[in-house]
Image (cartoon, rainbow, N blue to C red; front, side):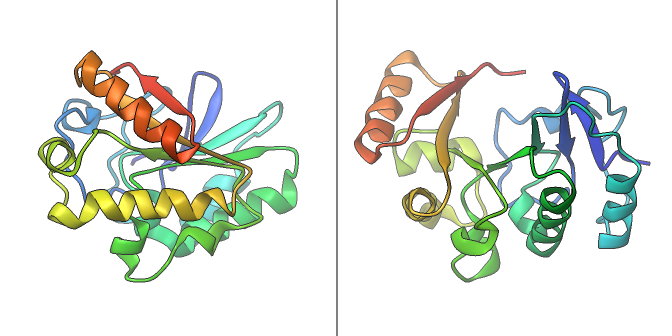
Amino acid sequence: MADIIYTYKDKPYFNITNQCPCACTFCIRAEREGVGSAASLWHKSEPTWAEIKQALEGFDFTGAAEAVYCGFGEPFCALDNLMRSASWVKKRYPGISLRVNTTGLGDQIQGCPTAPALKGLVDTMSISLNAPNAARYEELTCSNFGGDAWPAMLRFAEACKKIYPRVTFSVVDVITPEEIEQCRAIAEGMGIPLRVRKRA
C-alpha cells in the first residue's frame, strides 16, 4: 500500500494523488517506487478523503515547521482533497507552514481559475518553471495541454503573487546553464525567486 504521508529530509510530505498532466523527461517517478521514508508512492487507487484523513490523524506532526504537497502526482488533480487536507492541518497545527509543489497547470486541469482555492491555507506556492520558453517546456514536460501549458503556468504564477505570502519558481538542473540563466531572467522579470533543484 502506498504512503499518503511520508517524510523526506525531516519534513512531512503529502502524496494525495498519482495523477499528473505531465510526463516530464526528468521525473523520478519513472525510475523508482518511493522517496524518503516511503517504500512506495504508487497508489492502487486514488486516495479518498477518508483515507487521507486517517493518514493525517495517524501521523505525528510534532516538531514539523513545514509540510509539503509533493508526491507522485500533481496536487491540483485532487483539488478537493488538497483543500480539505490543508484546512485540516491548519486548524490543528496553525504553526506549520504549508507548501504546494505544482506544475502550475491547475487552471487547465480544473477548467477554472484555481489560484484562489487555497487562500489562507497555503503559505508557499512553488511552481515548476522548468524551461525558458514554450517549445522547450513542451519538450521537457510532455504536457497534455501542449503549447497552451507554458502561458497557462505563467498566468497561474502571476495570479498566485497576489494571493500567497511566498511564490517561487523552480527548475531542475537537467537544462543547460544558459537555459537556467534565461529562466532566472524570466523569474526576476516577474518578481518571483528562482530555485535551481538538483535532479534527485
